[in-house]
Amino acid sequence: MTTQTFDLPDLGEGLTEAEMVRWLVAVGDTVAVDQPIAEVETAKSIVEVPTPFAGTVSVLHGGEGEVMEVGKPLISVAADVPAGASAASAQREPSSAESAAGERYREEERAGSGNVLIGYGTPDDGEPTGRRRRPRRSPAASPARPAAPRADSAPGPEAPAAPVAAPDPAPVGAGRPPLVTSPLVRQMAREAGLRISEVAGSGPGGLITRRDVAAAVEAARAPALAPVTPIAPEGAPVTAPVPVGAVDPRTGLAESRRAAMSGFRRSVAASLSRSRREIPEATVWVDVDATGLVDLRRSDPDGPGLLSYVARFVLAGLRAHPELNGLVDAERDELVQYDGVNLGLAVQTDRGLVAPAVLGAHRFTTLELDGEIRRVTAAAREGRATPAEMTGGTFTLNNYGSLRVDGSAAIINHPQVAILGIGRIIDRPWVVDGELTVRKVTQLSFAFDHRACDGGTAAGFMRVVADAMENPAGAIARL
Image (cartoon, rainbow, N blue to C red; front, side, top):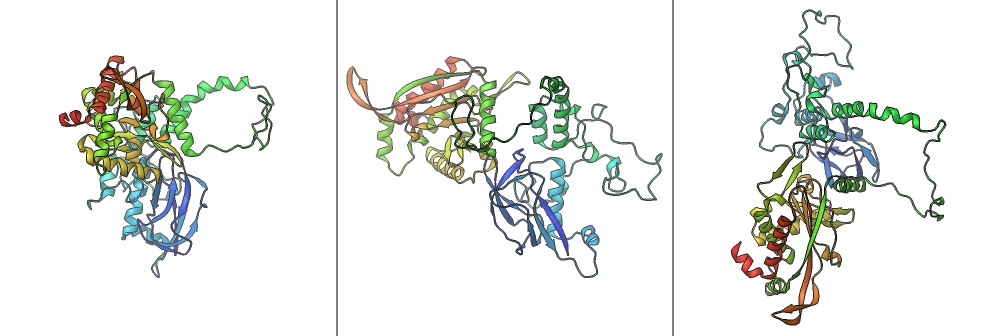
């Protein structure tokens, strides 16, 4: 019997840790390849993790509620080895789906791909994904003769002589394009301000991995941090945990509670801080007589909800002002517009505020849009929204009226360039045809990136949405 250990993979979100929510198996259970074994919570969603190994569960590395690091052991599985065969020979002669799945996982993990989970973002058309995903290799890295000795194997006595060995792959920048298969690696380098061609790859054939980019970031940061070290006084005490009940020297009050920020809260904090730091934000708002919209909704109780109508009018506004459905590529000083809309929806959950998106919202009718909004928001509250839905939004609609407030200066969901908020709809005095009456009134507030457009564009978008809400029947007839 041989034991194989499956490490917690990068769940395709570029995160470094996840919290164990629930084990789906126990020690002694028999598992099959691709069987879900655990539910883990990341900063974005709850994900089922499948195993690439089949056999009997021998060890669960971590308890429920424990925060686990990516790359650390998750589960160990003991597999039976045929009589008369050693563990080594069993590993050298894989013939089952377990071996193929495990090899695919290891291949993608080495490449830094986000699709490292078996059955998670991988093709299902029956095509041999291992071969399709394998990074290109130079002749020096062919299976017959590795380009470099492995650290875990000593060189044999019959190793080829130095003159016979093929030269190492040409270094990046010496006429060879950088070898990198993962968009996450490229994004990581871009956000760190690095040129991918200047990063040395440690993978097969010079493949650049996330670890290589992280090392390059640290190396670039080290000279800048070096002069800072002497500033600290000698013998300065190392920061120690603050005991519960300690007195805050600024306020003179005892602290009643301290709690470490969860991965989700850290992710939210980083995203919102980046938005405030990078985006020159401006806000406009308008009061809207939504009486006609409320009447339309009441006339068809089984029809689309109010938010679905507003979403339809937002799509019309983005069609008229497409510069609000894009991003600012600061690296290239370019303004990007998308061909289609992934409509993000701010959703308050037990974990905090998230913004899943209805992917391809521009393709749906109002009734279909209503169904997708209900499905996506429910999935987000249950932690079941997909990574694409959680991160793929191009514009965000925030219904803070559901929280019984009238307005809000919303923060743009980076890297988007705008967010529209709608407050609660309440009875207010309103002038109609020179007469004071009571109408159903709401407030729209719109925050936009002033780099992407000016106030005229923002006002034009707001009027498209507001006018449609005040005359919904006419607006729908024109859509």
